[in-house]
Length: 434
Image 1 (cartoon, one colour):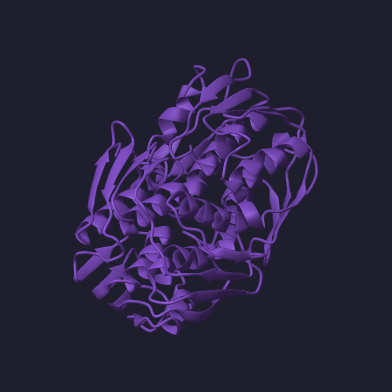
Image 2 (cartoon, rainbow, N blue to C red; image 1 turned 60 degrees about the horizontal axis):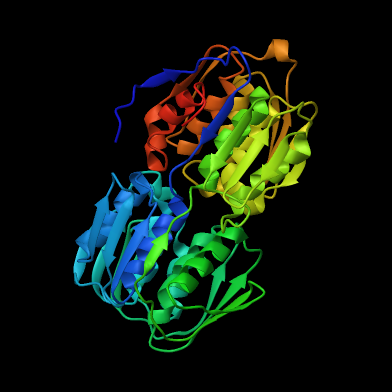
């Protein structure tokens, strides 16, 4: 990983509006899903375009400790996985997953189908992130899992002796990762499993992404309107799998075009993407940007920005990006139906509100989102942005510094979680390519 300073001053954009082409790294969400499925599969898989970041490294390290042969060639962005056919070779392991929610939740479910005793722990913030609903669902299917401290959060202990199958409920309003973890593991249960979603399922496109990865590796559960899933016993087969560039990461460069009035093209990400976060450009288009969608690239050109009132439940990883864009729009913007992002790397609703206020905005923090009233451009103020050890806070608020002199990002190294070279790519847009 690169060396990062303790803080980073963002240079305001000067000169002509940008005209740049960017290729962001592979999707974290796809990489970690493909790693789990490939590890459970029979035979060898080769994942190309794979992301190298803290989140994917902790997943690779955990799989290696579990006895799965995983080789990560960072230079070629390729990961080779020798699948374990649904049974991890190691019968015990103590795993550290940092603050990677996908690694925690996907591994917890996957380990339950094997045989052995396992413990998963992470950072202090990870010990605040909920997992009780997943544990309850697994236990209803025949597992023996528990929160070690009785908090409903990690550390998690799994006494694994396979899953019987059966019927389970899983809450949908906290994290879609509970459902995704279950779905990826359940083909290896001894009997048929039925999973019913209680309440509204948040971040629905991420479940669609999970189903797509499962399908690519040869297994597809029955899906009844995203409310009930029926999973018969089966298996995955190893294969070559290409991972798309990360649509959440691309949002920062689309937003750069919107804020500066320039033009940015993101390559490798187009209209056929399986990632819901490509819909971020639809919001920018509504705000006044011009968007050209190709099969393998998307181009955004900024224009005068108007405010927006938008339900971002399905693409909540881009909330912080849009909040910064709203700082430069004409009128009051509302972001709603994202209460679940309070349970992410930080309470993202509260964090975004606090940092926007430092820059001069009036922000009404609501239970499920934000009302953002931008100040007059002359009233925008410099600020040191606290990032809360949250990669998306750092990357989103860096964009504010392109228009507001005196913005400094504290702990810029937190971007290593999903996008280690972000600062280099952001700087490269000034020369036209990244």
